[in-house]
Length: 366
Image 1 (cartoon, helix red, strand yellow):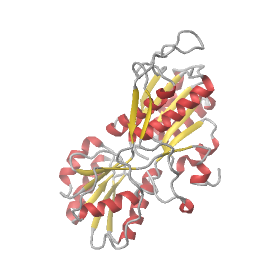
Image 2 (spheres, one colour):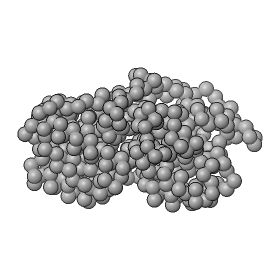
Image 3 (tube, rainbow, N blue to C red):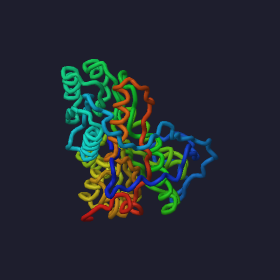
Image 4 (cartoon, one colour):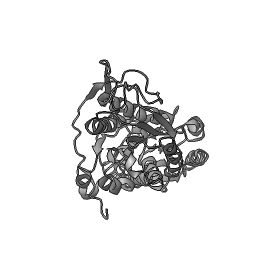
């Protein structure tokens, strides 16, 4: 999900800005469980319980690789495949366009099959790849539970999973460094909560995905670690919603806001930006836009203007989907040729906020 949200060449050819953290990111972990929805352990109104020193938590950047344009002619004579999520999701369209662009640059034939966010359609895509003689393929289908059946139905060739685990056939996983991406955004939200409210917020709402189990667990777990590294202790009034699509998030966030009457310091984090856009719509309809403080994952164009102009959008983890083909295609070509590739091919995420969105993307019409 968004689960999905990744990256391709940015407008103006700007290079990805370097992350401030290199190697390992170390923080202080939370004390106690992160599943408390009772309002935390405040000792009195307007105060926050003191937390005992917690053990250090390490979030690794192992597996992160650099974007690279494939060598011209490196894919000549190869027929490659890509099971896409479809153009209806802005993030996915950017990924697909990047795969096409880089396959063309390499001189490879790329067969793109749109799964339309449907696991059964992804299964049909895999079958078609087998009949067409695809020599290696990238799989970005959303239903992790069907991965085994899709692996079996497709050609027995190298497979690179994109953002969602596709066991047992994946030779490598490319896309989000999920825990790290969640951590850097969660840490930014925690810092905001500490600076603005001394960590005395009202509720923590996490928009997650049951379809993309591993990505959701790692990414949203990273959010919790990052947030609690700054605001330690049990998460206050935590609400976990299966809401990784805009319409679903709008509906479920509408219901959730009714359970939080009069509360004006509601932290909302999401596995992707689709969820955040749905939460914004719900709050606007309820007349409570100022009550929610937001952070998503992806920073794709659908969110650029909101990141720039919404004062309550704290920060996103940038995935740069418009550059995913600069990882997927070069490594898929190597795999198709029988070369050894690493098991992890992860994006070098960075924090995106109103402070640097113009430098990264220069969004128009905001």
